[in-house]
Length: 271
Image (cartoon, rainbow, N blue to C red; front, top):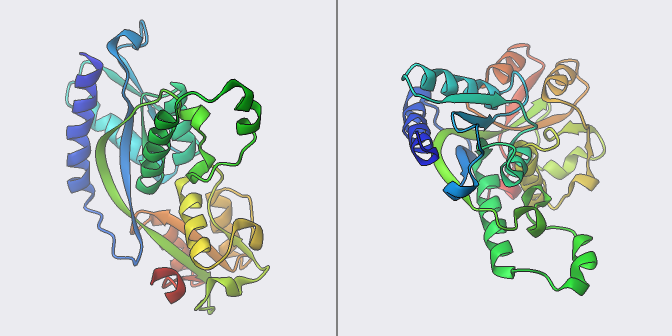
């Protein structure tokens, strides 16, 4: 089976997954998980590995990993004549970079990160090759794209949207009985905005930006999702920002302890 046919199989399966999961965003700010692939000429296909599709997922035990495993399992039960190797990654940003470097063939990417990656790749193509004398200077320039994607990383890369998988939502989780009417009021108290390399962290940056803040302005702990959940349950965090599916079991379990609750997005962020 040709690579294009394998991607079409995943696209059909992705459309079915959207219906099967039945997750609809009810939050003020929603996001979409999409399946993104790397569009390559047939002549550049990996020799000897045509029967296995490398699938970039997310951290082990996380939502992306669970979704990827479910897709791979469902595809296997269709009798497809190719395999799917699910690879654990750091999340959306890492997945885009792995796609660009050719380490994976398809990957789950949060929609806003995917949109930025498409835009950054298009900008890289339009910019063309840099002048030799400017290479060193441009290499040190800071990127304004999500995930700090650079033209060099995306040069010659053509991404392809394979399928929409499910809807997600931003969750503002606060320690009870706290209610936040302004995110800037967190001050220097410890919070969690997502794992490094994740789309959730990139969305959190946008939310902080809407409140007039950057990551440097807050005391954001550099820990894993599971550790953040445990810290919130112990009362060590004031707030968590998580972009994940509605009804996420880990969040539901945390809320059930009575230690935390979901806070509405403050007006200065959602308006």
